[in-house]
Image (cartoon, rainbow, N blue to C red):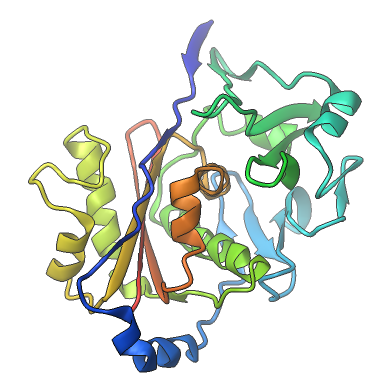
Length: 301
């Protein structure tokens, strides 16, 4: 049996802005927010299934995972809704009292991946359990008294059919990860009473290039191998911006895990919830083992 540690990396949150005054461009800001971006209905996952949104209200966000019309997964964020006997908004103590300690590892064929639930601030950020033939992960909000902020579950047979901690890279999976990340971000903004970000999907290639560079040149930073920062990349990509910011993440197996980790990091959370931002684009690239690198760029026109 081979044991591996599932790595988790996050780029330190950036809240950067151009020298131009945001107050002098209120008209452009308001105009951008009036545009309505159509949301994707379904998203390819790393499993043999697609995620489907339930409804279109960003505030009431949940997903159901289906394969050939069979439900084999779910993701719940709606306050007071319950999954596996635990309500969204419950405490970490309630989960521990009901289910005890989470799993120490995930086992795929001849390889076991050790699971770590403690973040860089020594707090329990999530926990994964095997419950009624489902792998269930409870995510905790470290900024709101460690309440259960969301619950993710996958049928055990579906999880183990991956044969690895990560999924098999494909263009469809990349697009699914990118599109779902935007949906998750706009859900968080709706919860906080903020306007949704406009998905500038045509710029995804800019973010993908940075994710690819991090993999190819073996670094993990907002500054690339040539010394360029996120604002340099936006300018080179002809993005018209005033405010800008960037989140990066790596090691998480999908967009949900990456998003939950970013929301528990103060700097990244600020970028996601920064009221001045009006637009977002996302770029995902995969290492040979399937590990995704995420680059999320925010800006306002």
